[in-house]
Image (cartoon, rainbow, N blue to C red):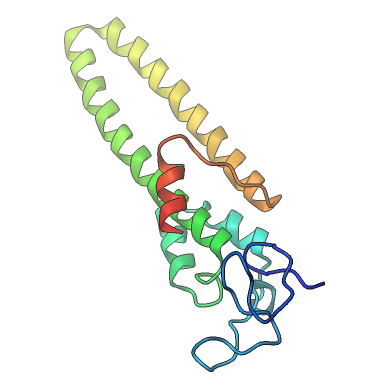
Length: 155
């Protein structure tokens, strides 16, 4: 029994009963050939999903623009989550930078303490970034608390 390349559900006809994707041998709804799988384009679905996180929103946008990958729901999810995650981190970094200047103006030691906390936060975000790339490469889907549901709706 074939399985849907988009959602993994078992397929008995020409179209997936869950998501409506045409089976590999069936013609696409537009009459043209079905879109090529990610492996035919050079990268597996897992590798493309992991690479969405590599340069943040830049690689997220690139994978949303490249034809065989922007048709795969998993890659689209990771691309959107990468975009939302990196834009959110950029906004938080600006806010922390402003707070850092304010705390340094108030007291040198208070500024130093805040700078240490800012460094720990940066290290935690780096570890989270590596974790997201690793889990995407393993084919597992990690949904972040705020940006994950947004990415699922967009994908």
